[in-house]
Length: 324
Image (cartoon, rainbow, N blue to C red; front, side, top):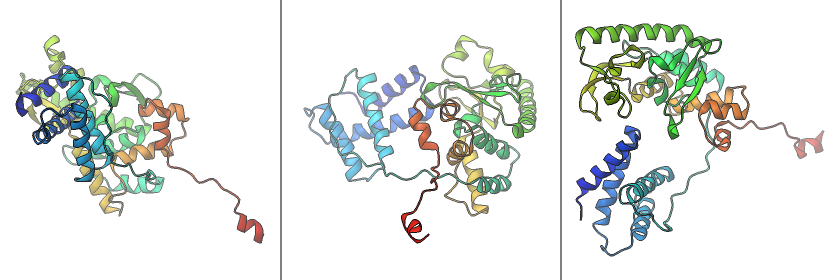
């Protein structure tokens, strides 16, 4: 029987081979480790399907996890069996956590206006531009910070386009750059160019992190301007995949913190988050549902429809009719 560390390392290796996101790697490895620990208390001869059922049921009954969390754990365990152990599981009949049917929230245009006015830049974080890209392009929090210079296409369309690469589901898509973001984005790229030049002069051996094995296939790519980040981090760090010093981009928590602080100032704390701005984009946009689906990067139009804040139509009230 393999040890916990051996199993987790096998999962990590397979995930890297498939080029999954680092966040997915961390999440899956944590859940697989937790599942391994749970199975130590079960009879070795118990079928895998029953072990998975018991694990998922305990998450729901004992730990009261949300449906999203339980599904995340289930996905990690399925990955372990299918991709690492080469085993296809049969039917899983576990007690599943229920997903509450909450109405999606979307701030009004006035609330977005108040939030934008309250956002503050820092020397290393152009928070105002990032928030505008989230709302103006309907981006996920990880998408603007992951932009590289080559992903900004100024010659496409009236104001240019952004190429969002390897987004959720591994899909690429393009979104138009809002007019209000053109000048700030050009200024940010000038700042990024200054950092790139400083790196080339002071730390010529330090490049940027690249996806997959691109750095091996194209050794000069990490040092080229077109592969540099639009929103580079202020300091170098260790690339977890190659174990070398690199320049990485800003982290998601920089945007999350900026939005949280701004929301607190205008009494919107807990109501507006970076992802809620994506919902606001969908609700406030005048695009058709199918056009929105493509801009948001959804596979299903039902998913896109769920992003729209419902507008209650004017209906005839029977009591009002009676009294009129």
